[in-house]
Length: 532
Length: 68
Image (cartoon, rainbow over all chains, first blue to last red; front, side, top):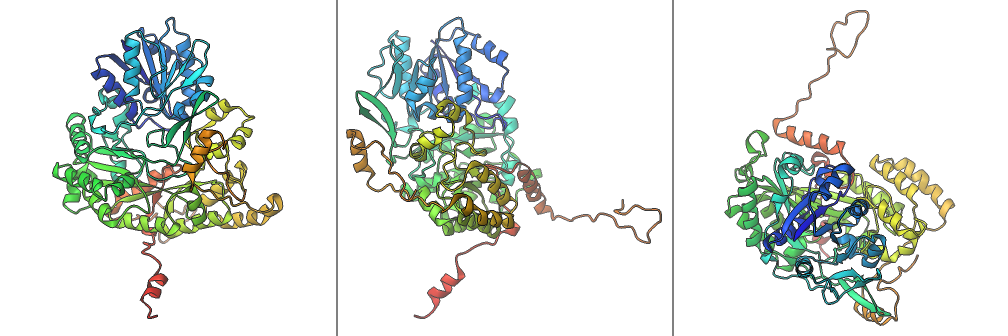
């Protein structure tokens, strides 16, 4: 059986930098099962329409598998149009966050799809392929899929259990991606000096999920958050506050890095985990410590760190492994940060989001403004660059949180142009504000999906105090630290809008609400915010 | 090279000064310049020399130390 995996273009605004880890794993799983596999990394190649057509016609594919997050919506629709023109009829499967977040909606918006994999595909896709290989197209008892019946009606099956023995996963099929042609020339990451000098970077995912409940975030159905409910003989997904984080063993991770170094001569690794620190806390602080100690024992420590001297590009490029990851302001500590630096960590991405305690509490971030500042200092003091991600436009964003952000930026030396709070499908705030979101797109879900980007631009606004024009203007003035103009507008705002709104969100009691939701007593799992 | 160009010669030319960046700061300066040119979204950073390394509220600490 011939399988073509396609990685859709994620966004055109940036060069391709990241091999899609999930597709690379699935390609290797299919390879080991004995299928004939090709990968078309459209995001890497950015091909013309004619070239896409040539790729699709390059063989008579039995299966075409496409995977991605919600922001690949536009390109996935384009791919499906092109697939529809083929003179043969491959079985088309879509997986990833794009369909996991809204299975029925996507099946409706993408009529060419035959089947969707909902949540984790490591076990589901092989079962689907095995059935196809044996001419069996009965999907009723396959967990973790949405499928279409002869009348075109979509049916969602029970969820697939998460895979717990993660170390049984093979290493990703990096050999099927254009590393030398595209990815290694784009190795540079502008998050640290060492990242900027990276020559051969690859990414790895050493864990799945995050134990926190940030209301703008979505875990792709990989962290125990997703469940299925049934109403009127129809099933649909709902995302809860359940968290079931999973992680590879330190041995698997370090052996993988050694393999990457030996096979691909890499000099930099981006850990793309949602949040390394939650895994570390869940293991009582042993997980990251073991990873770091084993990296040093394996001889991966960069020589300039071993010799306690600054990184010198003339001497140190390509020596040892530098790496980056994700951290959390209330879960990091000086001991682990120091050890991470010793093991080659150059920068850590912190979703600090805000420096206002009300906003942070409503996000469900589990941090305070004070902890955010302490984390910056602690990380810098241990020789690691903290990347201070910021977002504006939260539901309770107000002038006070804007002033708090600018004050903290000045105090801490933060240079940033914030993201806009964006209600991606699958996040709590997508469901909380769904009606309002769709109103902004004339109730056209397709238009909203096509508009979604990487949150650097305004899309659907969920702020209850600011509209899109105000948010755009405020961000520009914040970046310029133009407090005078912001204060001027602050004075005018009340005349235009009246009293500010400070909605409060809560998660407590969600298990009871989930039961009420399942039984039909409640229409939404999430509680409408108080004080709208 | 001089900042001033005119129809007479100054007693002393005013040339652009050569900013002396310590060798160990060259890479850092290059990083700031490059990151700033791409600022936005996930590209954000901390200017180390401008950072007030916050170690908690001194007032809080003083309050804790004060005899009750």
